[in-house]
Length: 281
Ligand code: AMP
Image 1 (cartoon, rainbow, N blue to C red):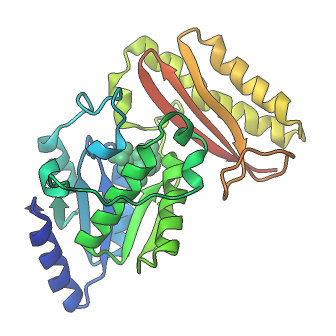
Image 2 (cartoon, rainbow, N blue to C red):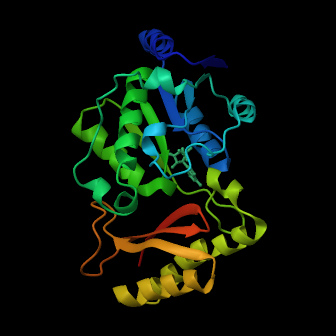
């Protein structure tokens, strides 16, 4: 496994491999790898001749009062996990290699970032789209893999790839969960045991909503109220949003129709967690 920190060197390695007709699969991450990331790597290993992982805590996707500084970083453990997962390359650039002093070009979508997480994190998806576009140009993958855990991010990347004609196939994988249902996240390690217990109500409320839909309930407010009430039973939770949205446009539903995206973001003390589920009949 080769570790590269210089964008030019990574790009040269990719150009060389492409010249040899190798199919490159790419998994972008911010590190602190967990089973969700490992599932992406496993799928990438199946899809590519060459598997590239990036480890980069991207400063431009954090707001001024967010957790950029204290975001968990553990390069040593990540590299061990990457090796076991069969990565051929790990690209881990320092921030100054990605954003030089005069950096001023950003990738910005018009509509998809207006909804869900974009409402409270106004510059987040501009940072995400920009770093992913840069990583695509550096790593030159044939396929890139993303998790449905960050559903809005997935839709934004799919749209950017279509709109800007990146010759890249975007593959998604379902949310990987702990045995008790909690969606895996690098931020889960911030949680105290009590907070982790509270966090369980997030996935539980998604399951309750799916059961309501399966029973034939088609009332938007009834579903949203039940989900919110389930979350708020846990005193520690503060809701950022609970929405029923169109799975493609991400617009909030006016008329209830299935399938629908039920998306949740909430804070447990200062820790922001997200989860979602597509509700089917
Ligand atoms: P991150 O390191 O949090 O930026 O995530 C890197 C990639 O891993 C993104 O495509 C995420 O959607 C994906 N990911 C994170 N958590 C999970 C999970 N629990 N299940 C599936 N994919 C995940």
